[in-house]
Structures are given as structure tokens and as C-alpha cells.
Length: 258
Length: 311
Image (tube, rainbow over all chains, first blue to last red; front, top):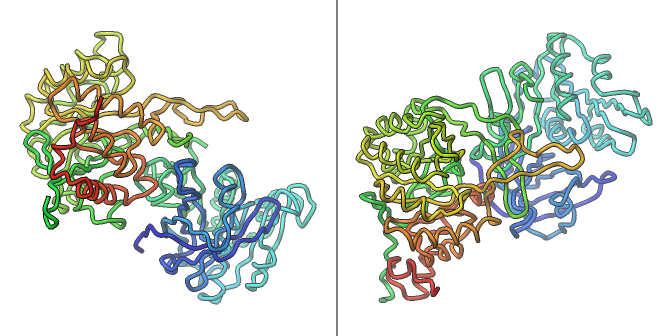
């Protein structure tokens, strides 16, 4: 799908967690985006912060696209202060999406670590609405307050299991330990989250001989394949997370340099 | 100037004619394909490729980039497919565009590689000129400079070797990490360089205070973007006053206003660089903005604007 550089209007913004925001954008050029793709957002028209920031496409409903983000620094802080009616510079849709080649024959298990729920919600949307599948969704979080979008996944018809590091909600422990207990041989894993989580998940998937697709995060400067700043080590050399990814087959990743 | 006559934006680098003065900084445009969705690439005056080395290079470990105030640091590490990979996989797309292609080349240690690369490029119809990325290790043992671009004699030696190996125009890319960039420019002009391009990136660094680790795996990297513009402008002007060959200027140029500032200080060609990562259609907007300025100021051609800074 063709990448476009365009301006989108903020149609809605709301706080959904302690430092977390859901923002809706009128973004017709993104209507054809597929789960796993992302956009590069310009948070200011001034020269600082200079670079755009990447956000996974969280949902697509007609021409309305949403992103889910956490305020971690100056740029996301600025973005969180955007109001309804403001215009944001967008480049997208970017990157490769999840593959649906096995969803008819394998139970999709979506594993989200923290902000990893962002692209996985869009995936769950498509799986339920277009593929007639009800994924099992595992959401792992630091604590009860940081669990994001649980009700919304349930509203799609997904079964949701929660894990928290501090045990304040659901399973007490990492989401990978919860996955270990719930994973079945006929499953396929779709995961997004912190690198250590994904690394352990890929090891588990290989050991259990279960296919897995992981969506990687990376520091990006351009987001559309030009700068080579987001390289990740794969079995066939460096690949660009923004172009050949962000979705990779678990078997391709070597985890070198992590 | 008549209302229906458009200003003449044409410029020349040696024998190579460009229809307008706008191109892109090496390393900020890949080999062009990633930008084809964003604007009609045929509008560009020229395309400067990401640097190609003799052998393919995987590049540096991550992190390779980080943002800094109004800029960014990069230590990509010259990741590229090598000259064979460039010819087979990247050149065909560039040739289709019909825009002059300036191939950026670098050695990985042996300056003789510049000659091998120049010889390989000499027979490529799709390549209009060469840009020598001499910000590479000076391994000759002569002089005390780390990079070829920091040593006027080493730089001149490379230019002389390359000029013997090709009939295509040769552009030497200058580093700002020197005491006197104009004397490096003079040295390469004397050695036969058809033009100089400047500035390459400024050596820089950033550290995460929580982890105490450098933000780049390579520790240091090159600073680019609006933050460097005043340095780049001053250097372009100093070089313009020192040499007769065309100056191809870059360093924080983001729009037509910036480009015109550099043309007024003597630049023949201007390059959009880091801005391409933020606004992929910046080069196209730059061309239009330059033309609009010339119309507004009733200046019929760039030669009447170039170097007219009142200083």
C-alpha cells in the first residue's frame, strides 16, 4: 500500500491509563492499513523535537484511526496536549503487517506486554470482525493500574487473561509464564512488548514448536526505510524494523546485540 | 522580467548540467526508492546516493541514531550493498528516473579502493558524477590525522588518483571537523576536484544519565540537522571565497529560505538532508520556494544571486 505524507485532524483524545492516552484521527489515507503497521507522527511543526515518533495503528474504523501511547518524554508529552481539531503531520501506513495465513487452522494467542497492546488491538479487531476468530489475549503489566484496554478486548469477544508483575491483578508474574501455562500445540502466537519478553517468548515458541510472529519496537529516525537507523539482526543479516518489519517471524530473529 | 518568463534555475557541476540547484545529502535519501511514494523524484536537480564501498557493509550495531536538540546523531556505519549490489539492485531504479545520479564512494581503509570504485563507475551510463566521501580512516600512516578529510595532502592524493581513473566529474565531500576547511578545499581544487560538497556531519556524542551509557553503540556519531546550519553556512562561505569550483552546500538546510541563505553565501547546489527524514517531500518544496523567491525578487537566474551576500 502506498505511503502517504498528509495532515490528519484529531477527532478525540482521552486518558486511558496513568500516563496513557488514546487518540483518534480523521485519517482517510490510512483506511487501508493492516494490523502490525504503524505511522510516523510529527508532534510539532517546529524544529524541536525534530524527528517524528512511531505509533502502532491501534484501530481502524472507516476513516478513523486510533493510536495508543504513553507519555515517556518531551515528544509524547507534547502529543498528549493536542486537542480535538488540531492537525498532526502523519506518514503512513508503514511497515509489514501480521500474516493471517494460519488463522483458519490455529487458535490465535495474542500476547501483549505493557504498551504491546497497541498494535494487537487492531489485530484482534480484524481477527474477530473479518476472520470470524476469537483470539485468546494475554495482557501483562506492571500493576493493576497499568493494564490497558482489557474491557475493549472483551467487547470484541476475546477471552482475556491478565498477568501483573506485582500480583495486584490476575496471574502474579510475567506474561511469558502465563503463556507457558496456557499455550497449546495448535496455537499461533502474535506478540508485542519489551525485548526481554519477546526474546523469551521466541525461545518458548521454538521449544514448543508453535509458530510465532513478533512486532518489534525500535528507535526510528525516518520510519520509512531511508536512514537505516532501526536495524535488527536476522538470520539473513540486518533488516529494517520499519520496512522489513516491524512484524517478524520468531525464527528470523537472532537477538544479537540485545 | 516578463510575467510569463520563468527564472533560469539551471546549474552545472563540471560537465554535468542540473535543471535546478536542489539535490539530497548522501545518506539521507538511500538510493531513492523509499521516497518514490512521496513526490515525483524526476523534479530533483540530481540525486546523491548513500555511500557505496567496494564490499558490502552490514553497518554498526544498534543504536545507530539518536535525536538531539534540533538535530540528530548518526553512526550508521556506511551500511551498503557494495558496488556490485549497487549496480545490480539499486542503479536500475535510479536510471529510470532520468535525473543525474551522483554516486558517493568511500574506502574502508585502503585509499586504492577509491580508484577501483571510480573505475567501476566510469563505465556506468547511469552515473553522472562521483562524490568522494573522504571522511574515512587515514591508514597511510602519513600525518597525524584520523580521517583523510582532515589532511589536505591525503585528500589531494585521493583526488589525483580518482581523476586519473574516471572522466566523470569528481566532487570532494569535506568534513567540518578540521581547523581550516577552506585550505582543504583549496588543496583538492588544486588536485583537480571539479567541485566540493560540504559539510559532512560534525563529530558529536550523547549519554543517557540513567544508565550512564552513550546513546549510540559506537559512542560517537555525526551531528546533522538545523542545529548545525550556522556552522555549515560559515564554512560554505569561507570555501566559496577561497576556491573557484562550485560549492555544493548542506548542513541543516530544511526549506527554500535556508537554501537561499546558502546560495546568497556562494553555493551553486543546495542539499536537503536530515529534513528528508521528517518531511520526505522537502526537496520538491525547496525547488518551488527558490523559484517563487526569484520571481518575487525579479531575479532572472541563480548566477545573479549566488555569492551576493553583503559582507
